[in-house]
Length: 130
Length: 135
Image (cartoon, rainbow over all chains, first blue to last red):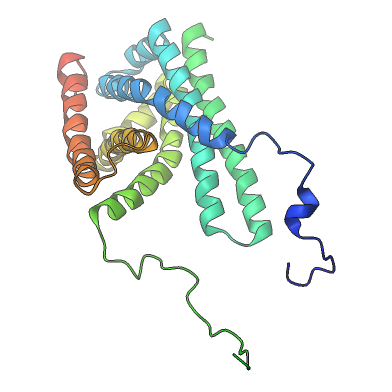
């Protein structure tokens, strides 16, 4: 309102345009992925510890076996969606400079997609034996 | 009410420096810190899975994960996963409006902290003994 030449309030200016209908999307996706993460995290931790002390051939065989590979791909999908939303919240909480915030939010999207696809590529390569 | 003065500079809203630290507050902070750490922990997963394709790459990864710093990072990563998972369950319970009373909320955060250590220990025992991994 400060400095606005309009007598109309911000509320009056947006009234009638309807909502974006996506105000709770991040809230909801964070909870859906949180619930998916519960069993997937427990499975992933056990799988990772199981790999310790095994040689490359054994590790590749375990990670590339159908059940383990599918669990890990589901885990990667769910955690990367979850962590992209979570990091966006952290950035929005602490970074108040508008251009720095936009740059970091964009970097957040790029990082989560790159790390998620890179890890998934590793699993798929082991599964298909390429 | 004749003269109106410009309002004095006042704190906008009370923040961490105002409140006495409580367990629920500290656990809220730890939840955010573990989430932040787990974000970058995915780099370890990507390295692990990509390295597993070949003996040379895996030798480098094994050298790292077998070192004491590598073990510590993996232990910290798995503990952070479990701690953040239990913290998430706590928040899902709170989302339903339950467990917010003065006794229940303290009980929930204590269970979160103790549970994370116990469950991490159990999963390492299962992974190392039952599933045949080795330190």
